[in-house]
Amino acid sequence: MTIRQAITKAQTNLQPSNDARFDALLLAEHTFKLDKTQLHLQANMLVDPTHYFNLVARRAAGEPLQYILGSWEFYGLPFAVGLGVLIPRPETEMLVELALRNAQCMLNAELTIVDLCAGSGCIGLSIAHHLPHAQVHLVELSDAALPYLKQNAARYPNATVHHDDIFNYASSIAHCALVVSNPPYIATHELASLQAEVQHEPAMALDGGADGLDFYRKLAEIWLPRCDVLAVECGDGQAEDIVQLFGGGEILQDFNGIGRVVVAKREQV
Ligand code: GLN
Image (cartoon, rainbow, N blue to C red; front, side):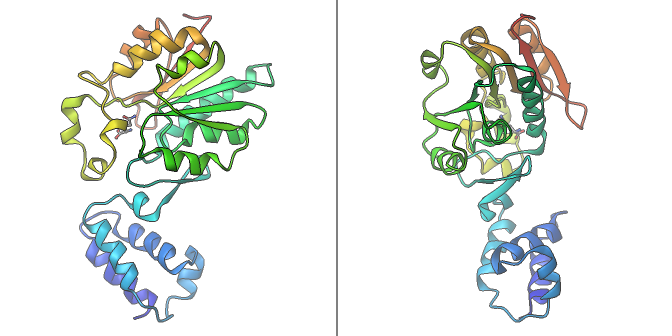
């Protein structure tokens, strides 16, 4: 079978998903180890499609594309991902953008930055990449997420991974310049109604308690007094409540107009 025939068949198998062609192409690049251009140039090459069709079947069964590929791009950088770790999402890039903007205003060259509930590490490690003089500490409790976090962090000499919970780890840090976090923020009763792909993601990375705000309460109590700037991602409709919990802060909207990031600065609170 040629590459073109394999992709056409895969696309048919992946329908009715709107992303059928996109998924079929990305899985083909991955399987046949060709980039997008080579894939088109070599479309008539004969291949054994068995492994490709196995991956397509997993995708057709609802497994997230990112888990099948094993790596996903965030803020222009590659991150290892797989079962047990939250998939980096484009709206989270706003949090990195904002953290970098704040950190660049800070005069202290040896900034200490903490990423709580780090997951794959995409937030803290993107910051570590752009601020090579900062020391970035990434804190994650999940045993399943930890191997991905360690693998990703190994690329950044200024990043340190801590297998700990965000409350316990606080005793190691008296003060830091910046805390970033994308904590679990889905209300427990909403977990069951999330789309099929999200059901494959770890509940531990999603479940924010009865109203979804459990982690923000803890951040306000334990971490806000320890840092100059606290920047968090949140869910639809939560930003105002979080500003209340933090005793002040600025809300930034994502491209859908949803209040997605809250930043609290110490002088404001
Ligand atoms: N953004 C994720 C979602 O909507 C949730 C991530 C989280 O709980 N921090 O599925």
